[in-house]
Amino acid sequence: MKEVKLGRIAGPFRYPPFPTLQVSPMGLVPKKDGDFRLIQHLSYPENNSINDFIDKDHCSVQYSSVDEAACLINRHKTFARLSQCDVKAAFRLLPIAPHDFDLLGIKFQGEYYLNKMLPMGASISCALWEKFAKALHWIIQLKSGNDDILHYLDDFLFVESSQTSKVGNTLKLFQEVCNKIVGEVQKPSSRSRPVANQNSNTDLEHLSQVADYIVNQGVSKNTQKSYNLALSKLCTFRSSYKLKQDWPVPVNDLLNFIAFLSVQGLSGGTISSYISGVSYHHKIQGIQDTTKFFIIGKALEGIKRIQGGKRNDIRAPITVQLLSDMISCLDKVCKNKYEAALFSAVFSVAFFGLLRVGEITTSKSKSVINGSNLTISDILVRRKVLELRVRWSKTDQKGKSVTLLIPENGKNYCPVRLINEYLKVRPTCNNTDLFIHYTGMPLTRYQFSSILEKALHFLHISKGHFRSHSFRIGGATELARQGVSEEVIMRLGRWKSHAYSRYIRLQFF
Image 1 (tube, rainbow, N blue to C red):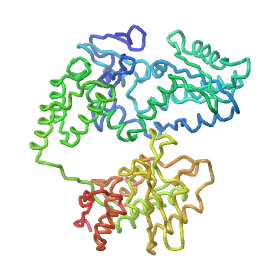
Image 2 (image 1 turned 90 degrees about the horizontal axis):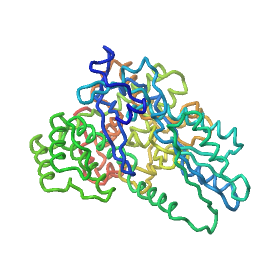
Image 3 (image 1 turned 60 degrees about the horizontal axis):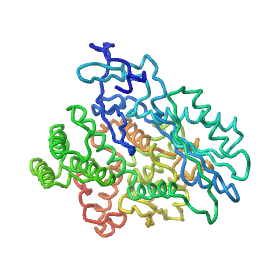
Image 4 (image 1 turned 45 degrees about the vertical axis):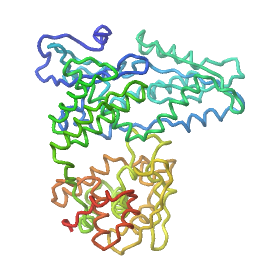
C-alpha cells in the first residue's frame, strides 16, 4: 500500500494492536487526474460512528470566497500576476495524536492497520487543516510582506504587481517554507499567469478553471453534497466486497449496490437518490451512464413495489401552544439573554414564515458567495407587519426571490415583536447574516437543532419525531387549521405543487 510505504499508515498487524481498536470501512474516490483518493468512512455505523462523537461546533469552517479573490486583484490598478499553489495530500501531512490511534483502525485482506495521519472522512478534518493553513498563510504574509494572499483549504492564491522586479517571490517563498515544514513529501504544484484588470486576453488554462466553476454552479450545494454522499456509499460498498473501482460502474455492481442498500433498510426514495448521484458522476466525466440501463430502472421500481410505495413522513409539527411554551423557557435554556432573544426570534420566524432550516442558518460547507440564508437587508419591520425576502430556496435555485408578509398577533410568540427585540441587541459587525451570535458568528443548523432539543427536554417533552423541519410543518398545518386556502399556503411556503398537502397534520392540533 502506498500510504504504508509513506509511513502514514502503520501495519500490517495480524491481530488488533489495541483492545479498543475501532475499525471503519475504507473507500476510493476517483480524482480528475485518474488517481484515487483514500476515504475512511468515519460516519459508519450511523448514530454510533467516530464522527457522531465529534462536536459539530468544532467542525465549522468559514471559507474564502471568489468575491474576496476579486477584491485582491482589483487592488492592483493595471496588471496583476496571479500565482496559485496547492499543498498536495494536505490532510495526510498532519499527524494524529498517538492516544487516538485506536479510533482509526483499518482492516484489509484479513490484516489490521492504523491511520497515523489526518484522514479524509473525519468531520473535523477540514477544521483542523484550516488551523494549519491559517498559520502557513500568516508565516508567508509576514515573511514576504505581501498582504494579497488568499487560501481555500489547501489552495493558496498570491497576487502581485507584474510591474515590479519581485514577481513570483511570494510563490517561491511559499514553496521553500512548505518544504521546510512538511519535508520532501510536499511537492507543491503551481501555476502563475499575468492578469490585466481590463481588456486582457484570457489564457486557456484560466478558461478551463472558469468553465469548471460555471459547471459547479449548475448544481446546488445541497445536491452536490447528496451526490458526493452517493459516491462515498458506492466506494465503501465496492471496497467492502473487494470489487474493482471501475468506471463506468459495471451493471452487476450497481444491482448488488441496490440490493446492499435495500438490506440496510434504506427507503426506495433514498436508494433512487443514491443512484441519481452515481448517474451524475458518470455524466460529469463524459462516460457511459450505466445507471440508465433497463435492468437498473426495473430494480429501483421493484424496491418501491416491495416497500409498498412511499414511506410515511413521521416528523411531528410544532403547534402554536408548543411554540409558546418553548419561547417562554428559552431564557432558562439559553446561556444568556442575547441567545434567548436570538432563538425566540428565529423560532417564531421559522414557524410563521414556513422557512426551511437551510434558509435561516448556515453550515460549515456554505461559502459566502453561495450563501442562501437570510441577511439583515432581507428584513423590514413595519408597525404591524414583518416583510421578509427569501432570496433562495429549494424551489428557487436561480434566486428570483419572494417577499413574505408576516403580521403581528399579539402573543408571546409574535414574530414582529420578537424580531424587533432581537434587532435592538444584535451587534453591528461585518457579518450580514440576519441571525448571528453576539460574537458575530452565524447561527448554524446544528445549534438550531440543539436548542430545539434542549427546550423540549426542559418542557419534559421527548424529542421523538420533532426535527428542525417541524417548524415549517407546524406553520403550514396552523394555516390549514385557520381555513387558509391551499393557494395561499402554497405561495407562503414556496411550494410548486400539491406536495404541500403532505405537511398538513391536523391530527396534532
